[in-house]
Amino acid sequence: MITLYGSVTSPYVRRLRILLEDHDYEFSNVQLFNPEHRSMLKEKNPTLKIPMLQDGEKVIFDSRVIFRYVTEKLGLPAISWEQENLLTLIDSVNDSMVQMYILSNSGIDTSEDRLYFNVQRERMGEVFQTLEKEVQSGSFNHWDYPAICLYCMLDWFNFRKLYDFSEYSAVSKFYADNKERSIVKETVPHD
Image (cartoon, rainbow, N blue to C red; front, top):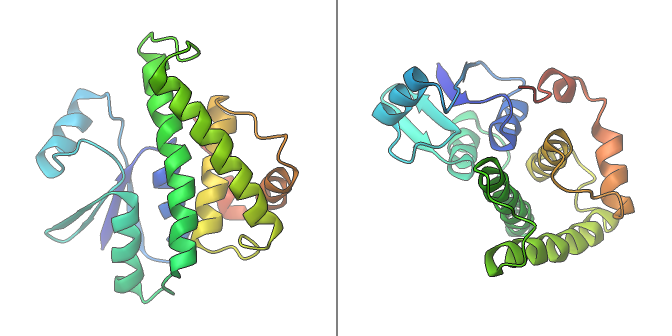
């Protein structure tokens, strides 16, 4: 049996939980700042990041690598190069906001006019304009892994009150259209 380690709040963990909806796996809820959990994570994963997947003695790090591993192991459909690029767009803004969130929770004012913060904000705007066009063109019409990843990112932004994407009508409609899925409701992030 495979075990997915991660927190219920992580959009990277949630996307894998949704992907694995119809498959047999164990979910281990890890609190990164709990000393016991951190010690266990440290033993298995030198990146000290989640998600992490364990399959017997094999430990896999990073959501993209876990996705590839699970896809091959379970015989799930592979994604195209165009979809890989969509994931890169989603991951780039998700990573930016995770960093901004961590900095903000560390007492750093991320609204300041600083190069690092400005680059993150610029990336958000550029990528969201592209995602808007991709949603409009039908790139996210099917509930596949890229669509799951986009939804999980958007919902995490709302959950953490990090980014208002309401100006992007197609993205907002995509978000609203998928909010009532049963697996989405079952995996809602909470503290």
